[in-house]
Image (cartoon, rainbow, N blue to C red; front, side):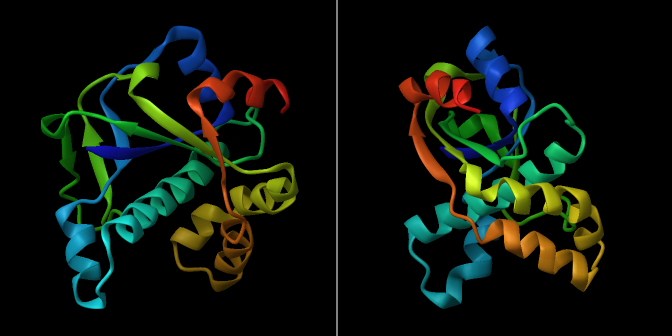
Length: 168
């Protein structure tokens, strides 16, 4: 199953240094709940995966809020894990694509990384400061988060991860 792991540059460094991130991990995927939410709109599989990636990107903002040394860029790792290692989170208050991966995530599992570009940093920094307020319903904070989420994440192949981090 393709999963999207919210991360930070700190997490990415750890993955590259250690070769794995120990489970359990919170990930985002095309869960039955996510599929059901978009069922009537005719959304295809690629669009559902993009929705899961966006959920992980929002979660990356929350991780940045508690990781002051990480670059102010959202990081999402796209990885393939065994289907039986991924279970949707049963909490109705979580994102529809949120799931728990019981397996460790190894560098070999990673298909690609999605990282904000330098141009996004000011907007991401602003969003990190208010993402929890946005989660609680603040329209002003949501506007700031929307500014950050308006930036497309750049795509990196696994062999580009080290050089990409070196440039940050």
